[in-house]
Length: 245
Length: 253
Image (cartoon, rainbow over the protein chains, first blue to last red):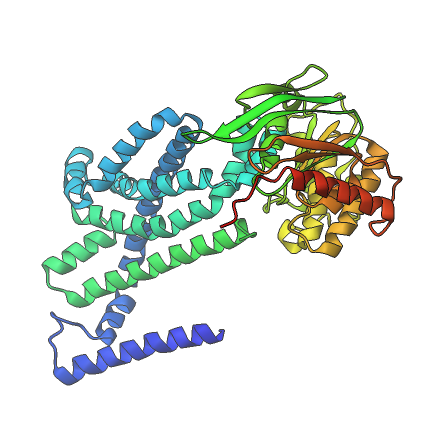
């Protein structure tokens, strides 16, 4: 572990120790703030339930991210080729972005049921916008000197897109994914709160209604770990794919 | 292929600010012509018009009766700008190869990217990425890429201006060596008179903006040229005299 890793681990351990001590010393009841040791016991004891729940949430979040990301990318590509689409697509995208997802999720649950479909749709709605905006910006970020060179050889639009616009957009796309990937987990959990037969969101909802704070915190801890993991995955993919920045 | 620039004018903005007015000159096939003038005199605009990247408001550019657009479509223009404009995500060899694969002309027999890189002295870095090279090396790659398409017309917009003096001189010498083998028609933009005298057969001098042709100097000196020689200095002085004569009158308070 490098120096930064040691510092980060030290900070987390220190924070947990202060938390544990504060709960013990003040005698705070577990239904208000559970101590880290209480949460750890739930994590250890419920691992056989938590892992499948986490898997369900992760799967739904990934599905939504793929759908939302693909739609965002597709629309940004369409606008790049046919600029007259921009006003219409951007108005629609802004409408989706401005609609509170918490208000849409119950409607989608009523329409699509308690299965994965509403979770995927909610997540797609959340992740679509950052991918659209960043991809569009990326497609337009081609260095003017590079654009001039492509014009000098009369590159056809398709070749210009594949050889100049697409690689130029990659850093922007990863910037979007760094936001959208953790966001996808939030989308899936919010949708699961509105009605689901499994998933971390459902576990959180059940724990909340039973005032079972250790279970609620345990689910949050798993969600946080997933979010950090998915973020690291994106960063690692970026390092491999965008090696020139 | 001789290049004819006929009465070309261009203005920008609203109200229009003239950048070029009635530019008229001919570049003979296989010659090296420099366009020299102060910053803002429209040199780069003129080169972009010749490349068909900017439309003139009046006048025309033709090469053997063909428009700049036709030339670009036929991949007959080698473009090199001040910045090398290499693709950072492609290796050096792939940057050169891309020039050949885009808008591919199967009828044209072209040297391989590796041969071109050898020609510019960079065979050993073919597998590197551009950011691993110095500025001078990147411009050499850009030169190899310009050569890669076998274009009969090279348009070069101060390609070595951002480099240090020594690198600039070395690159200019190498470019001249290559050009003397290939003999494409070259239009070279610079604001540096000695550089123009060192390289070119003819120098088109532009007035400060709006750019008009202040005069054309023929450089009748054998290559390689010695910048310290009296004939070289005489041509530099002649070009300077023409440009100074073209300066707008200054108001002295």
